[in-house]
Every structure is written in C-alpha cells, then in structure tokens.
Length: 448
Image (cartoon, rainbow, N blue to C red; front, side, top):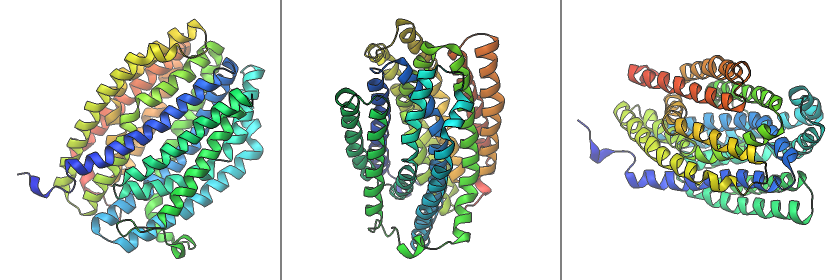
C-alpha cells in the first residue's frame, strides 16, 4: 500500500523545482537560437562555422556536466541521509576538481585548436573554416566559467532550489543577447560578435553562483578548507559516477563531431539547415533536459535513505510528467517551426529541409527521449552507473554512428539520414533502460 501522506516530495515541491529549471533551460536554449539567428545575418558560412564548432565545444561542456552530475548525485544522497558535513565537503571538492579539470582542458585545446579543426572539418570551404577558428579561440576561454557554474548549479539543484539558477540565467542571457546585437549589428564583428558576449555572460554566471554558494543553503555550502584540500576518498565517490558519465558523454560528442564532418560533405545549405535545426531541437528537448536534474535530486535523495518504494513511486511519477509535457512541448515547437524558419536569412532549400528535420526529431523526442535520457539519469542516481553507461555507449556507436553512415551516405538521405539514426538510437536506449527498471536490479547499488 502506498503511504501517500509520507511522500518525500509533494506536488508543490516538484513544481517549485521543475518550473524554474524549465524556464532557466528555456532561456539557455533560446540564447543558442538567438546566436544562430543573429549570426545568420553574417552569412551561411558563419552559421555553418558556428554550428560545427558548437558540436566540438559540446564535447567538453558535456564532460563538465558529467562531473557536476556525479557531484550532484553524491550530494543528493548525503542530503537524503542528512549528513550535511559530508555534503559540504562533497560540493566543495566538486568545485575544486571542476576548476582543475576545466583549466587543464583549456590549456590543452588553445594551442591545438586550429589543427584539430583542420583534422575534423578539413573538407569545408575556406570561409567556413575561418569562422570555425575564430569561434573556437574565443569559446575555449569560457570553459572554466562553464565548469564552475555547473558545480554551483548542482548545489542548488541538489537541495531543490532551482529558482536561484533561473534568476542568474535570466540576467546572463540578457547580457548575451544584448552583446550579440551590439557585436554583429553595431560593431560588425561577425563571428566574434556572438562569441565574446557568450564568454562575458558565462563568466558573470560563474562569479555570481560561486559567491552565493559560500552562503548556507539548508545547511549545505562551499567551505574554503575543503576547496583547498584533495580528499581522494570523496573524489572517488564522485568520479565513480562522473568518469563513466564523462566517457559516455565524450564518446557521444565525438560521434556527433564525426557526424558533423559527414554533414560537411553535403554542401553549405545542408550544413546551415542542420545547424539551425539543431538549435530548434535544443529548444524542443527542453522538457527532458529539465527533468534530468530532477530525477537525480529526487531519486538520489530517496536512495540515500534506501527507501526503494519511494524511489519506485517517483520513477513512475516523474516519467509520466516527462512524457506528458514533452509531447505537448514538442508539438508546440513543431507548429511554430515554419514561422521560426522564415526569420532566418538562408535559402528556400535550407528552410524546407529544416522543417523536415524538426518533424522527425520531435516525433521521437516526445516519447523515446524521456526514457532514453532523464529516466537513465534516475537509474544513475540510484547507483546503476555501469549498465547505463554500457548501454549508452553501445547504442551511440552501434546504432547512431553505424546507421547514420548507412542512411546518410549509402542510402543518400543526407542530413535526414543522420536525424533518423539519432531517433533510432533513442528508441533502442529507451527500451533497454525501461527493461532494466523492470528487472529491479538498480535497487541493489549504492553510491555512498
């Protein structure tokens, strides 16, 4: 029998977590769309260059997110047990390792950025490559700020206070949008005109959230003595989750970059259409992106208490919320896509292709992706890291990569084939994750 009076999270508490996080993620996605929109007035080569580099940047952004997610799971389980001192040490160690890791990545990428771009996207036209080089050089400087912000955001999400990160995101994105308009239309800075405002906005977000995280929030905060030490035991707990997630995310993004090099074979209009479609896809995926941290917080706290029945209850409840709202949101985005596409300064062929890409994406994003992504994060929060990582790697390489090449090159479907392979990947992963939940093996793992 369900003990409905003793639920750890009420509907109101879930709403307080979900709605601000949804609005925050919406702002982030809209800024990505705004970047693409503004840069489209510079030309299709600029749009192509920015979209290709964004696929490269996302490798490292996902690594920082994986690290923050590992920390968030550990912190959530400590909070569930009410071990607040351990939660303080965990979140402080997360900040330390995020700074070290992101600085190391930036130092490695800066001198080798141009050769890497030539290696990956060497077949693109010269003006597209120049846009890639300019955008990457500026983007790399923002990596530490992104990692620091993710660490701080994980604290607020672990305690369910997502309204703070929402407010920071609003201000940050206003800075970004205004900067884009000034950079492109007033300073005529081209690609640099959208890259520098993003850098400034990310540095602002990192500084503000770090200052706030030194204040106490439900007994959890940054503590300097823990930031300045190296606690291998604590780091191991986070890295046991973060490293598999990071490997999975890294390979996933490497596959995306490899597929971007395949996209580069299909000509400028398909590259531009794919870049704009990806920006719209990002907005369409908003519900599942929002629900991922919610699964981590809720399932993590339930499993910290070893309350299996509560965890089962919230797996079902959160999945129902994710699928219901994802269907409504994806439908809304597709209905508005023809109007969105008309504001972009690209060819008719590109606009027509964008609509088809969004249709294919949104159909599967509404039903398969909620089980393939946020549901999988719930299994990770329970400690079932190895299985979810292995499944994700197998489907990314064995399904997405293989079928992308088959559909796009062998069948000559172009970027449409890559979109179809992506949806096939989600469907297989969703099925395997749901079967894993039904097996109940996820109940017997532990993070801390």
